[in-house]
Image (cartoon, rainbow, N blue to C red):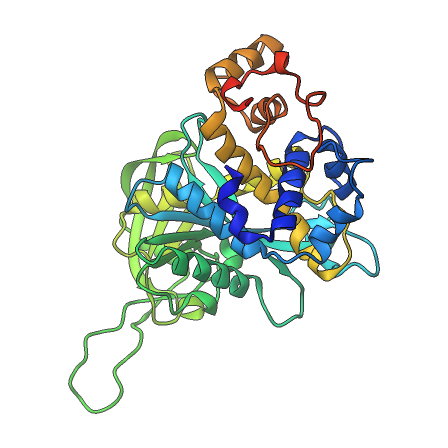
Length: 420
């Protein structure tokens, strides 16, 4: 599978890449640079400086690697001609070294204190949401990344918009639906091409305006916006609610919805948007969730379901940190910092692609049930199950001359088709 990525690297770097990605997914301990090197069976056989140079000095680009993987993901999981559903988010990896590149105090969604701050490197993550046959939920596969440095002149929405632009140029024939939380609102999304739409949660204090009236033919500049409609709470008080069924988080529920065509002047300026107000059937609030989208041709149910799929990126970030070991490598040089986290998070995408082609979900699910017979609700494999299957098989025939038989014993293989 990794042969398709050879064009991203030089010949020596590609050999190092295949060894490190094998060590990343095969390691049972910390995924530091030397931890990956040891898990690949190279400790004492090839100097570990080779692994460090791969991140800090080698000639390869995480964007190019991500785009190569996107093409593999689209070819396997997305039907021909279908739109691409893209999710944007960011996450902080804690770092405290004074000489580590890009470290600063910034927002940390997992912070335990009241200030919500943490010190480290923050990465903007762009992932592709796809349905895979061996998982019960939509899964977000991380593909593109950008290190965010506060006060550098590039905001998180600007970085996300640039990454989405890379995807649009790679797939000019496909529509790209971008979903993000309310923190990614801003002018970056004002001038989108016809093939890109933007959907986000609407801020409670956002002021909306009616669509501009038709030109009157009189002297003077035509109006750019209509009358002020107010905030979401103002709209909810006079909205026409209807009861509909919507699918969110793998469940179909009945909710109340109201749809308004308007302008979000402060953020998207003259771009027409659709605002969907959602209220649970037992709610006493004016509304529970407000979703805004530049996809004015989509129905309200589609927009709400699309925004609900945004949660898959949160799960992917969690899996990347806890199961894949993203952030374990403590690099400090600029290139190494910019590459090590994307490399580890792309490991999740590589793992899912490998399992889709070589895994045996039924056999691995039976093995997981045997390990935990009390878990009667388990009906699909998890990322942890895929990692276990990977450790019992070999992902690539390219290595550095190491003997891996002692790491992947043949008698333990459950995904047998990948063992060769």
